[in-house]
Image (cartoon, rainbow, N blue to C red; front, top):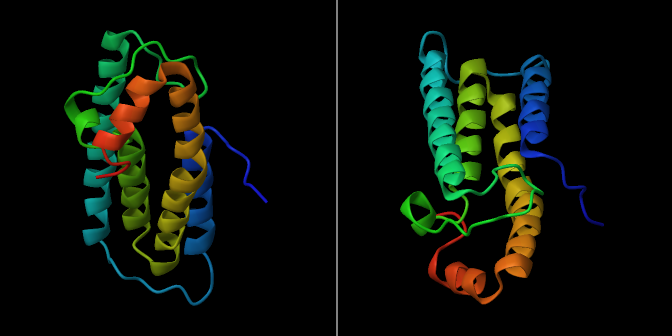
Length: 149
């Protein structure tokens, strides 16, 4: 059975909703009390700024950032020279920041599920499309640069 592929923004919204629900579960334990939970704002800001910067890099290269859109250019420099998925890394940093804001244990359990979904569903689908579009150039890139770090 394969999981459906959904837009990363929907993954983010579902993760936040799941974290909120988990936060309200009985027996939840605070692991990061106020005001320390506000450190999550730093992760949210850093991940958001990171992804905005990467989106501008895509725009300058003339290729869309929207998943499923036809790629125009294989961006392989800058952060893309050390990770094939720095935008998903940014998304996971933001989701981790949201979990920190809740400050309780159960929302943290959502983060690895998001990471697993990105790794097993979103990224392979995008990589198949990139390989179909760019062929040997993408295969060389994939051999040279790790999926995450």
